[in-house]
Image 1 (cartoon, rainbow, N blue to C red):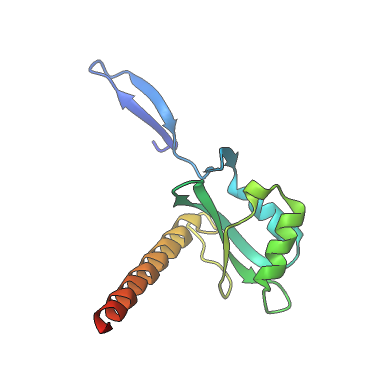
Image 2 (image 1 turned 30 degrees about the horizontal axis):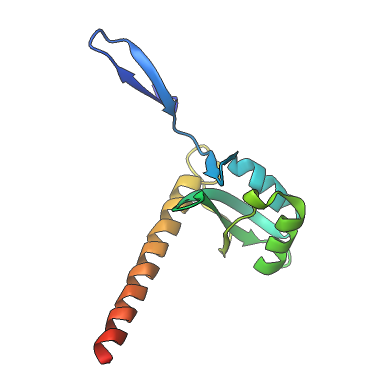
Length: 144
């Protein structure tokens, strides 16, 4: 059975609760639900669909990232969206970044936006970008 709880078993088979694996993000000492962030994003009416997730950050714990599709206008002004976020939510909840993606966002077998897959894609793209930056730095360094 899958509950999202992390447990350990002792030698007698008793289970001990350790924690819960969920989607909560901890940023700047605050626990933030992705749904809280998404509700504000939808309330702006600037996004069609969106998903929020935490990305490991060395000082914040998690940096909040968002992947969003444009609303009915066909374009998404990320600067305007972040301005609205700053106006509508506490500073610790404001996303560190917004990635615009053509919609609709992918769904899991339950019909919900596939947060886990999108977060994985985001991290993979970030790793490729970081590796490309390191390569550019190495190439530049070899030219000197």
